[in-house]
Length: 250
Image (cartoon, rainbow, N blue to C red; front, top):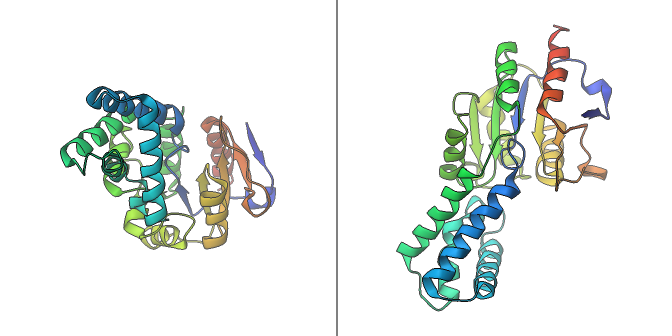
């Protein structure tokens, strides 16, 4: 299903498209749940603690790191979460264990992450139509690059901008503007496709005047007010149909 709220904005193909990654190209929550469980099981077994002790220490570690680092890529660092969690548990930094737990998280995460249907088909369509594409994503470059390679998307996008490179998470203007500087689109008709109504939709609209399209699925609420998208879709095949229709008007 695709629902367009502003028909006049969709009269032609865009000059460029920016994509969010997490929870836009694949569902984030199922992979995260399995990864967090794998870490929890490992920590509980390693230290013979109760699961609730892990939950309390990890929650506090995450809160402290996010409070300290705010809207930066490193505020999402599982390695920093693990390090601080071990410190909160009274074990010191334990760098080897912190690295091991972080690797457990991401290894499990990737093995449970699955692209939404027809993502690659859409990207193939766009390439054939000559529409440049870029990823604009939060988090550190290394793990986001790993995700892109794991999904086999490394040859599908023209550019990628992480919040580590930009210095700020979305909705700050830096990630969006760096992407456009790299892409050098021929016109100013830019689409921003993402799931988050604040970071992707409001950010794209306010920072680069993008036409915004929100990916809707379980756990995602449609943005309202200033966070309202110009269109929403649930399946990538519907977005492909829109692109095909606009491509036929060339």
